[in-house]
Length: 460
Image (cartoon, rainbow, N blue to C red; front, side, top):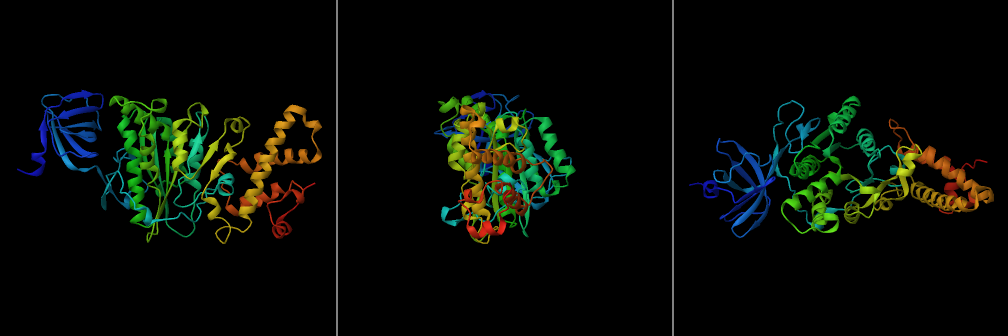
């Protein structure tokens, strides 16, 4: 009798939604792959979510409809769920469980990898370095994206985060090295999925993209597995094929809702806002799969996109995401209402790894000081606007009025750019100098005199 037959059982204790409970078993592990065999011989795949002495809770990927309590056979495979990956996946579209959606044959697997990822020894990690140009000025100049970084987008319902994600996929570049993008959509609507596919096809970037899409009507477990399948493909390309991989995950709020739904099914005691107490560690199991490894040329960079319920940045999803990741890009509804695209709110946005990867021969020498001056000057503009709303703009000093002029030009010319416009880093820096030159020279306290003499052009 082989090992599988020794670990095959008949009969279930209970079925609830997408879960079933089986008892009188032994030697079962967490995240172990399970086969359920129906009376007609059809099989479904499941994963153990909870194990204890003599029992296991299993979630079935295809749902439990049609399973019989008495006659269902369950086979524990003794290994985690694996995904066959290859470089042939580039240019392909898959569902949330790695099955082709584009009508083409399944690519020949070069390697089978655990979809849950492998723990990386912290001492084997390399510090993220070198930038990824997105072609968007507010990101490249003021919140620079670094290879190996986790930089989330905090958005809200109705804001154009999908357009920004598509624009980054089209425009992102690294110099002289292999680069590709893995895109994972979790719980996205059909028209949103069509928008991404059409955008990538029409602009010719699909050949350099792997897409994983679980639609809004997908089971909750499919939404939970989608980023894991996507990151498994990214790890293969980065650490086996030496490529720099940018992973976009949208929408992490849908992922967290699926996790809450699953937690409720299991009868777990809820924590903040009804989310399970392990939301932090679960998100970390996804976000921490980004990074660089010593003696490996490739890297994985993540841009998770999440919609904040009621635009509340203190909500558990953005709150916990902010603890794990290295900064955030915040989209602002008020900026969006003024017709600015992309509606990035400059002041609460930051990239914590930016300071070590700009200037000093990595980007232009004036990059750090110009970014700092733009930020400080715009912050003062917002303070002056608040004062003007109380005392009236006519009571402001001439210098304050210059700052108001600077703030207007900064938003309409620097932050605002067309959906189809890609600016190089040098173009964005030159634009930044044009805009900061609306202020008198003595106000540029964060820029060296040498750089001012070289690049400053005051506009009266």
